[in-house]
Length: 80
Length: 554
Image (cartoon, rainbow over all chains, first blue to last red):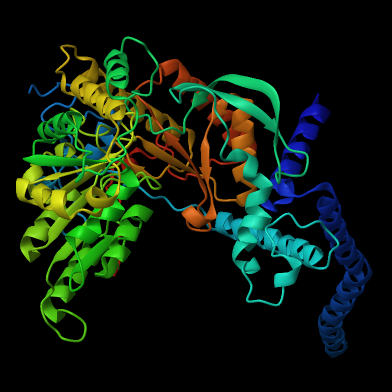
């Protein structure tokens, strides 16, 4: 039951996409071209995110850790 | 002439009983339909307007405009792609092109001007110019047609789609009918006079039918005299040049019809445009005209004439006649009122906006109207003082060069007008006017409650429903036809680029069941296409619905 309403909802979302971007008006080969272009762009963005985002996050994390981490060591040495 | 009780003492009855509490709480005291204590624009509504004037021009949320432009952007990119393919021979050219031998001459066809027509209009062209095969009454029959090459050519399948509900025809009072009893007199006149006149009014084309019709029109409107013409468009475009000329000033509304614009341009007078229905803009123009006079010589203008329409057919808004008349009296200008859509459709007894506002027809200098919409015929009239009409009889371009109205059409107008005035002994005319009023109010109220954005005045039978996105124009019209309802959708050149709409014309011949069918279909379609953009659906915000929304330009 849930799958049917979920499928209907996804179909409705697809219809909205078609209407908003005017791909409802396009001939089949134009639609193919348009969707190919869109999917290619989307895949490229996702791939870039997949490659670069973990590296950026870990670099930023290390930077902040180094900042707070070095303070920690100073306090420890003074107490000692 | 008895004042019908449906419109009691000049005010409408709003069914807002549950809102009385809210209004009393907020200190706004509502009495007799006139809201006191709500002053907008410094105009005290109590003196000029005898009833509340409520117009809606709600703006859609910002994301709608962004997505509309996105849709047009994608359409434009693909348009360029297709044009490129057509220019380089990768695709067959279906548009008009010159012969090979004339390629080096000055081009006959400017390809870019038709860019929009070729690339966007063609894709959804099947929603316009649909051939019908019955009278365009409240229901009609359509010929089914299909296309094999994406709307460049059509072919008929041979099937007729029967009893499609007609929400597009200007059949306001339902006189587009084929009932034999109703058309008896028209048939007699057709047998007696034939169909053509083949002569102009000034030569041999003035028949006794025209005199009878003109007297009847003058009596209907309450003026001294009237003159009728064979074509409604030509009434404007051929008579404005006869009334004004060089050295005169025309102040025309932003959204005037093409016939008025053409007549104004043909006359050779100076044209200045004021913002739609905006009295501050009009007053500013009038003051500038009187203070500064003509452009170079600074002489006074020979004549200043204000061109407005009764109901604007793309917006559904009604002209602010009391304010315009007070402005015209103050600055000594003339008023030309084009009642093409409002004659027969508004007013307690169907006599147009002049009656709707409770004013006298002497206030308007030139009353113009057409018989195409409410009377189910063709042609137009100009009415006013006897001097004006006598002048037009000799000086109108239409009277000199165009053939006059043919007798069967004149008889149709005579019988419709007699029905409307009650001269045929029945109250059918009044019933039609009241039915139209009821249908209009019901339709608009239900659409507001559903959450659509509707433009225009609450009393106008023209109901534009905003669609905004170009993709939805085609989808809306096609799906409505699948549900057996015929609608008119309008897009870019006729409306601003972001505001494409579907325009419904309510008719007195529509029954409550037909309207309910249409409303249910609209409800479903509105959910499917996501068209319910209104943030002020009436059930949730009653006090916002009561305000007069006026457009201010600072």
